[in-house]
Image (tube, rainbow, N blue to C red; front, side, top):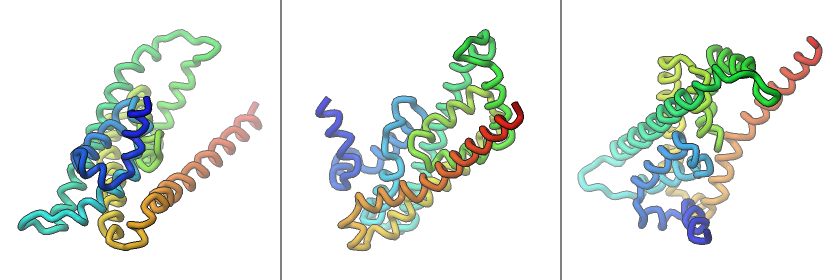
Length: 220
């Protein structure tokens, strides 16, 4: 157990990552976090920022650094896209039985139908926003598959969301990684990125949920 905790604690250690697989390790982790249930605890945002720093400091013979940046953004974005497709497929297969399952005190089919309607109306936005939310980005494609969100719609926002998510954070690490303050305060920078991308969205979701609850209460 201690060795496992030590492994995950090193995922914010720049030198350790470089020595244990480097960018390909990050590609694998991004796929796991965006497509496998067991990957919900992996630090995707911080790893993307670290990936940008690694790319910025890399020396590749006869390769323009910006070409190298675009190459890794494309590869990592692809890992995120395939991860979400995997999650969608899993949700679609595992959630099929829920549509025929009889109602019980803990399960109501109408909630699944409501979720399906939500994804049909705002599913695209939900998939893109989820990319920037730790834990949520793991479960969003699974739920989309469970409620059978239109696959073409899901695919479009899956691709767009992965490119925006990976491209923006990796580029930030690439351009800011040379700054001494960033190098000396990497953990604080990572926490700041998580706060900036997460807090406003969580606040909005809580506000919407509260508003929806109040509306339902008035209608009862």
